[in-house]
Length: 275
Image (cartoon, rainbow, N blue to C red; front, side):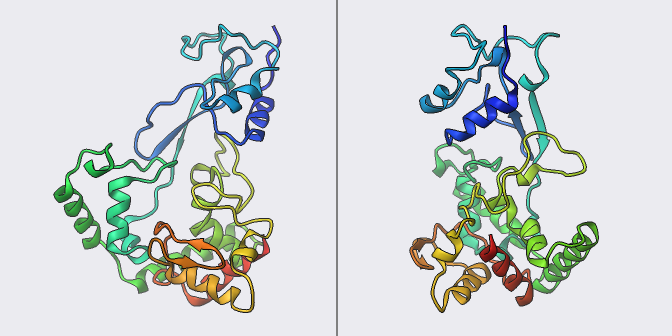
């Protein structure tokens, strides 16, 4: 039997545009379980087109059972990998979102991330409207001031400069503030302890849209493009309102005017426009 390396399988599956796994179980809050491969060179996929990516893999068998017990012979790349998902700080949540946005995030969760829906209104949660309101009010009660938030994030930038000399402030700020949504696998990547798949290209898209290959320049085009993008990052737009050239806000994009300085926001804008 010939087993195709997991890296080859992953490349083929990613080429199909689907994200697949041998098993899918709800991870504990704050962590994400990632399966890098499957037994006998086969990956059990979440879609038909992605499954076709494994049809020609040598060693694949129709009898492959992704639920088969793990034994001493099970290749390491077939085993689930548990990684720590870095959740954002809650004491600045309402400096980056308004109260309704926080209410909706708690109620409906963040699809594609470990943040689950908690509200009964989502059809999946356990908290009624009063419970959601109590939770949102508590989050509001622990908010720090914009001045303290800017001081905290400026210190993070200073530390990042020391750890990654040669990188621009825009790139460092993007990694600290934006990459968790706009770069695949960034939220659990630790360069000192790399576990699981490596991050995708910076700004390549994940929960948030792709920002590379001119997408940002097309979205915020023309003489007012830079200012429009600055306003979008600094203050955002309510749900269903137009932004940029053809964007319609989902209301899920955080705004950073209360937690970053004007110079820092401009550095992020300049960096994103260079991607």
